[in-house]
Image (cartoon, rainbow over all chains, first blue to last red; front, side, top):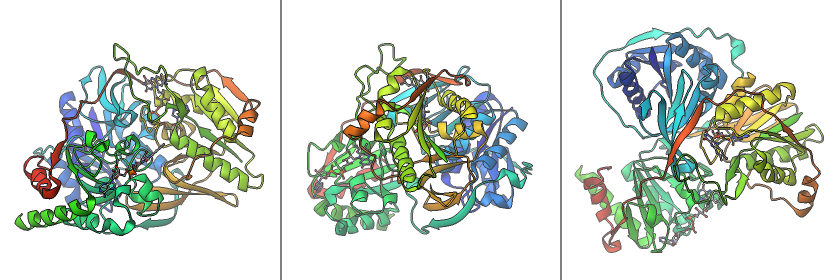
Length: 324
Length: 249
Ligand SMILES: Cc1cc2nc3c(=O)[nH]c(=O)nc-3n(C[C@H](O)[C@H](O)[C@H](O)COP(=O)(O)OP(=O)(O)OC[C@H]3O[C@@H](n4cnc5c(N)ncnc54)[C@H](O)[C@@H]3O)c2cc1C
Ligand SMILES: Cc1cc2nc3c(=O)[nH]c(=O)nc-3n(C[C@H](O)[C@H](O)[C@H](O)COP(=O)(O)OP(=O)(O)OC[C@H]3O[C@@H](n4cnc5c(N)ncnc54)[C@H](O)[C@@H]3O)c2cc1C
C-alpha cells in the first residue's frame, strides 16, 4: 500500500511547493501506515530527487521519455495511474496548479476514483475518507467524502507548509511503457518571460487597482515589489484598460493566488476580486475610502492616498532590508 | 464539424451563501441562476468560430447535466445563438457523475470539439473537462485561452506558469477553457430570446456511472479579526508589523 504523490519539475528542478506536497502526502501516509512514493516525469538529477527524502518520500519513480518535455495530459495521466496501480495506492496527491488541473481528473477516471480538488488541510477522517475544501471561491467550505477505493486529491496552494523528515530514499527508473501513439499534443510555439517572479508562485504580492489612477503611477508598486521580492498583480479593470498585462489580473475571472502577503493598493475589494485573493495569509488594504469593502477582508489597513503611502512603504522596506 | 459546449448552471456570483439548518446543503431558495462564466465565454468563442467558418462548423450544441430547474439557463444559451441543447435529467452530486453521463451521451452522438470551463464557480471541482476526455479516451488541453481553426486544423493556446504555449491536438478533443478564450460574453437580444423558445432542447435520461463522492457538510469561513488600521502619516509602521507581528517578511 502507498500514497502516491506527483512531484512536478520545472526544467529539472523542484520548487518549495513540491516539498510542501511531499510533506502533505507523507502526513497522510503516516496516518495510514503506508509508504510515500513520489512519481517524477521527465529528466531530474539525482541530487534534486534526493531532497524529496527530507520531506518523507521513501521512493521516487522516475519516468523518462524525451516526449515528456511537452505536457501531454493523457500520457502523463497514464504514467501516474499506472504507478498508482502497481504500488497499490490508496491515495494519489497532486498540487492544484496548472499541471495538476490538467492531469489529476484523467488519473481519477483511470483509477475509477473520486476526486477532491483544492483540498485545504489533512483529511478530517480516513474511514470514511473526508477532506475539507473551499467552495464558491472561498465564500463557504465543505467536507467532501470520497467513497471509491482509491482517492485522488489535489492540495490547495500554500495551505500545508513544509514538514521536514529524516530519511533516505531509493530512486527507481520507471518504465511507463508508452509508445509514441500515446502522445498527441504537438507544441507549435512557446512564449515565456524569464527572470520575472511567476505570480502564482509568489509568496508576497503587491497589487494595484483603479485607484492608482494611471499606468504611469506603477513605479512605487514595482519598486516595493522588487525590494520585497514580490510578484505584481492587478484588478480586472486595470488589465482591461491595458494599464497592466493580462497575466497580472487576479480574481474570479483571472488568476487565483494564495500568497503569504497581498498588498492591495487602490482596489475597492469587490467580491469577484476577493475570490482570487482571499486565501492569502495576510492582506493589506490601502484606500482613501473608509467604506471600501477591502477593509472588511484585510488584516491591516491604511486609510490614505497611494501617492503618499506607497513612497513611505518603499522607504521603510529599504531600511528593513538594509538591516537584515 | 460540430462543437459541444458544457454548461454548468451556477448561482450568480454575487449570491450570499446560506446553509440549510443542518448544514448538509447550501440553501438555494431565491438564487439567481446563471451560466458558469467560463462556459459563457466558451459558448461565445464557439459562436464566433461558427460564424466565420463559412459553414464548416455546422452546429453548436450546449449540454447540461441537471434537473428541469436548469432549463432557463439552457434557454439563455440558445438565445445567444446555440443551435440546440441537451439536458441529461438528473441531479449530479460530483464531477465524476457529470463527466461520465456526458461521455455516455457522446458515445452515440459524437462531436469533434468539446469545450468545458476550467472551474465551476459553485463547487470549484476543476475536473469535469479532464474526466470527460479520459472517459472518451480523447486528448485534452487545459487552461486554454485561445482556440482557432486554420483550414481543417484546430490550434490552441494554453496558459502555462510564466507564459503561453501554442499547441495542436487531433480531433476529437476536449478543450478546458479559461480567461482569454473570449473577451465579453454575448448578451441575448429580443429576437434571440423569441427564437430560443423554438430551438430543440432534448431531455435524455442518465446512462452513465454514479458519483464517487459527496459533500456531507458545509460551513462558513471563520469571521476575520477586525482590520488593524495604521496611521497614513506613519505608513512605514506596516513593514515593522509585517515582520514582528505577522512574521511574514
Ligand atoms: C462576472 C464578473 C467577474 C469579475 N471578475 C473580476 C476579477 O477577476 N478581478 C477583478 O479585480 N474584478 C473582477 N470583476 C470586477 C469587479 O466587480 C470590480 O469592478 C473590480 O474589481 C474593481 O476594480 P478596482 O478595485 O481596481 O476599481 P474600483 O472599484 O474603481 O476601486 C478603486 C478603489 O481605489 C480607491 N482609490 C481611489 N483613489 C485612490 C487613491 N489615490 N489612493 C488610494 N485609494 C484610492 C477608491 O476608493 C476605490 O475603492 C468582475 C466583475 C464581474 C461582474
Ligand atoms: C442544489 C445542488 C446541489 C448539489 N450538490 C452537490 C453535492 O452535494 N456534491 C457535489 O459534488 N456537487 C453537487 N452539486 C454540483 C453538481 O453536481 C456539479 O455540476 C458537479 O459537482 C460538477 O461541479 P464541479 O464544481 O466539480 O465542476 P467543474 O469540474 O469545476 O466544472 C468545470 C466545467 O465542467 C462543466 N460542467 C460542470 N458541471 C456541469 C454540469 N452539471 N453539466 C454540464 N457541464 C458541467 C462546465 O463546463 C464547467 O465549466 C450540486 C448542485 C446543485 C445545483
